[in-house]
Image 1 (tube, rainbow, N blue to C red):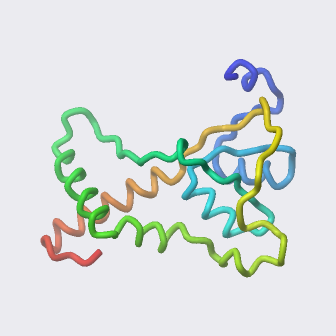
Image 2: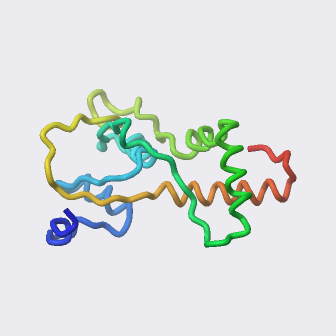
Length: 154
């Protein structure tokens, strides 16, 4: 599949999510991305739709740190606390929820899921834009907790 994607012109690859979204809107192009990012973009633009993800495609996010990083334990602890307290869900709802709400789209226009039937082959680019935002958010929270002490609000 990689050889097929590499052989097409224009390239199946895009340099940014914004370019991928532009191509989806203007061309016959499909962009593969993480579901939180897809929720954000489909909620923001009524002309976009996303294919529903199936349970076997769900997975967790990870934050990459340099080998032997002194922050590994802190980041793992912060992630666990954020997950257990429900703060990760609140962060997602605050920063990745559709704006404006998909409900403001005209009836039958975008803002939701599409069903895929008879899909075979094709080209798409795997893009994980939300990973960077999670990393920045979590690092900011770790720094804030360190500055304010353990009682920092989330």
